[in-house]
Length: 225
Image 1 (tube, helix red, strand yellow):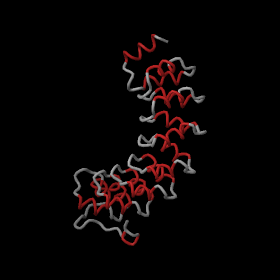
Image 2: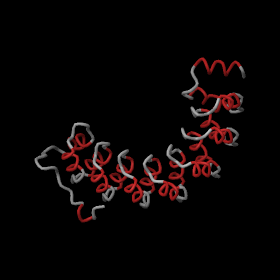
Image 3: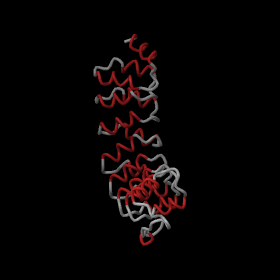
Image 4: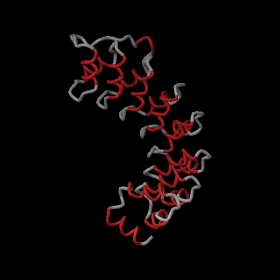
């Protein structure tokens, strides 16, 4: 990782655009790698933030932006799909909870990093973690039993939640958790037949949002109710 002393902002050589134009270019698919490297050192934070979010940005520049003095830039770097696990490990230990939320959602985060975030003092970080499709099964099961219903609801909406876990969450005392389960495309048909009879109309209504339930399947489910 570069040291903070190497972070002096510099506008790309020959780039005389105003900062708004530079920001738009930094976020675009047409900027060359040399341009993106320059925008990663731009004096305006909005340009660096746009570069940090660009999925074409090289890992070296993402490592640089992970140390940016502006939190918004670091949040963007933490959310970039190309940010490597080693950089996410560092970002996941930063004091700003918003950065840790972005890391908790990231599919590239290491198992060690996710395990640390599972004990994060900020509830919003653990909620983001519960919805991460790359969450290891042991952590997902642990969070599915969490006392905070918001975390259980995010587990219920996780696209990698196994059927047996969804079966348990479908009987959760909180309607929000059952609603998330009803909308999960991984929920088996027998579970959907149970949820169509749920006492809360918001849970029953969530079945219409389940992408696996075609209109014909939904009509059949309703006819069996």
